[in-house]
View 1 (cartoon, rainbow, N blue to C red):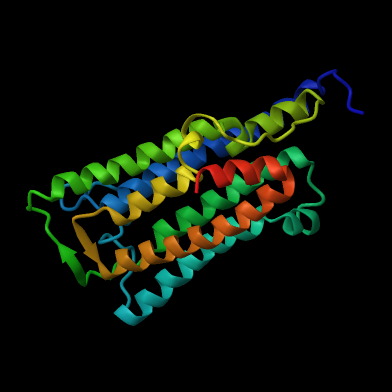
View 2: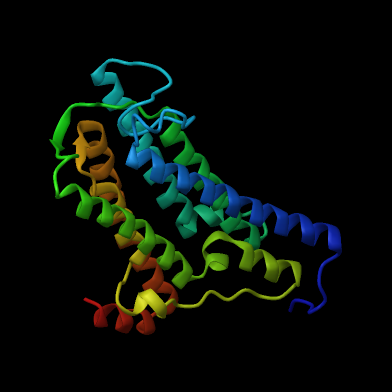
Length: 250
């Protein structure tokens, strides 16, 4: 039984700083990822990081660019999927207090996303391109809609629960943090609103290059695989409540 008295100020403050710093880094990385996908060249030349269609920090042959990009997508997907599994938490993160697990996951996810952005090698072979077409405007609207859906999905889930400050606050106050099944707000209509947002963001573009397509296909595969594992974990944790909610949204 945990005490209701808060922890001493220094450890509690350090834990909360650790969690909230991770939140700031994660949001900065996702903003960079949106710019990375929008690839606003040539007016984005002042942007210091690479973009999906240009600005790489080093040049490689196309075949090597493809291998590097594929490895970065696999790294991103593996980190997100493996670190979320219960066996990884039990075997690798066993030495951490449970409240630190989510924040540590956020740091690792941020590192994987930044690695993808910084090391990305553009493959500028065009698959489709209509930047000056009247259809470009609705496509950009879809692109923006995807990131709004992602943000609203994170808000619907609860930013504190999603990125770790809620777990850390409970630890600092020596009380138990009990995860809840998320069924409100955007989850009333979508089973995986954040996944939907990411898919819109990576696919909606008036200029699809081979490198961008590789990224979109890789992230789509990761999300479809990760969704199955996530749903299995939720069914194991919440049982019939989750299965009934999921069935109602099929």
